[in-house]
Length: 308
Image 1 (tube, rainbow, N blue to C red):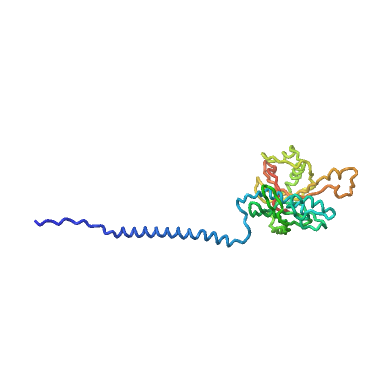
Image 2 (image 1 turned 135 degrees about the vertical axis):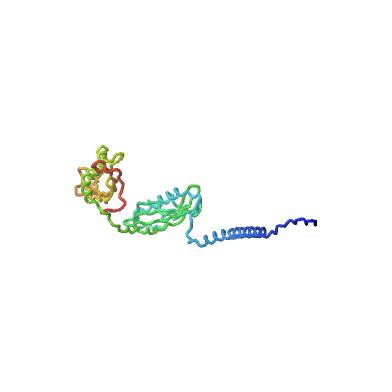
């Protein structure tokens, strides 16, 4: 009987293994390329984005400049700088002393003639250059116009000085207010509420807490105006159509403001306009809740838009 040949072990061809190795190498090289590209691109993009800026100086996020104190300093300076009278120029000169650097021209650009008055001076914005320098913009009113004043300032160790001549700028004027359509109104409710609202606003003007409770919804606390004003007229009531138990309405009232003590004195001239009571029309938004058969006031706030 012939001997059987020993069975040869078939070796692994390795074809499938080489494919996996090649795939892994390809993925590895792809990751390396992505990392290299991103590493090169990131600083380039930062550089080009900085170059492509509009040129407006940016405010350092942590410059160390004392913003609040700088704004207050510029406000005080503007109150002195923007008010002058040629009949007494030295008064402004003296008041400017603590705002200006040693050796600065004492009138700081003013020729010492004429007259200018400004009020309602308010901080508008600040543009910080670095830890020592900034430009503060304040708004103010002179006559019938609003303006802006740009003031360059310098600080060191919490002390400030105006570092250059200011600049007057336009305020841009008032925004255009678009017309809006009025709401669909509940005329029946408006008529129904008038008597109640007249009583409420009389109590609101006086600030009488006992009377106010008669008109206040459960859980609501309403504080009045303390007797400084009296109700001259309930001018208008606008009640949009809405829910059966809660409504938001707008009410326009005319307050009467008593003349001051000097005007009320026996020697005051009754023909003097300042001796007559002032009338001031204002608009309120009321949140009403119906409790039982009555509409009661849950909240009082200013109206958001003018009403007719």
